[in-house]
Amino acid sequence: MALSANPQRILITGAGSGFGRGAAIKLAKLGHHVIAGCLTAEHATEMNDLDDNLVGVRLDITDADDLAATAELDVDVLVNNAGRGQLGPLADVPIDLVRHVFEVNVFGTLRVTQAVLSQMKPKGAGRVIIVSSIAGLSSGALSGPYAMTKHALEAMAKSLRVELAEYGIDVVKLNPGPYATGFNDAMVEGVDEQLAEHNAGPTELQLAAGTRTRMLDNQLDPQEIVDTMVELCTAAEVPFETFKPDNILERYGLK
Image (cartoon, rainbow, N blue to C red; front, side, top):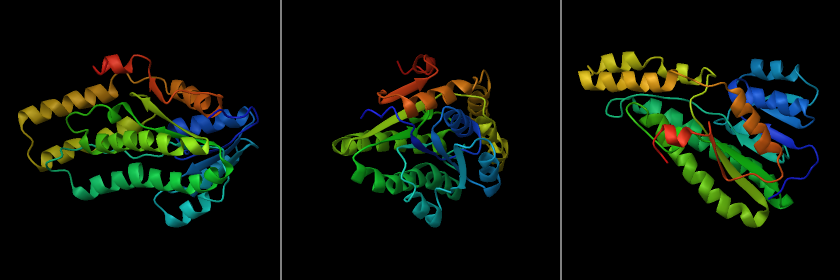
């Protein structure tokens, strides 16, 4: 599907911070009409004040009322950026924590996509962007709860792309590596307490330290992902898969 040259109506979930916030602001300044879906009303109000082309709305992708309102927005592009991080040893991590990260990253993403597709399909046009992760292709010690959800998004993107082609709706995905938005730092918080609670052994602690180093050391400038999101929202033709940084597959031994 090729987007028109006209300004797009773009909905970005998780736009209250990080990649979503940066992309929303840049797209609005470029003249596109951006709906910035934010988890809190405070963030939505703040976004409203930044640009005339930017409308902040409270959007919890796990909330039925918020999702129902989303179906009425009539957007050209959906950026599924909202997500939650969760680390923990799979043998002991509380199942409620795993369930919650699936509710946001998988079920919430699918539900908001379904809501938007309900008005894209009759128009015969649109683009859905799914923000996955390098964790959608690789997993290691403690990253299981988060990586499982991103693996699910990989399957979602591949299925949707085939299913929606006949409707003129493009489906693409973005796989970022570690970028300094604060998301990775928040995921690492609390892991030591989890390990202490189940008396982790020396090897497990060593693996945990390696995970922490991999996630937090040498994090990159998030502007690269912001710029990539803008390109995926506006370019007439884009690839199905975009990996950032460019060498991320080599860094993780995936190529």
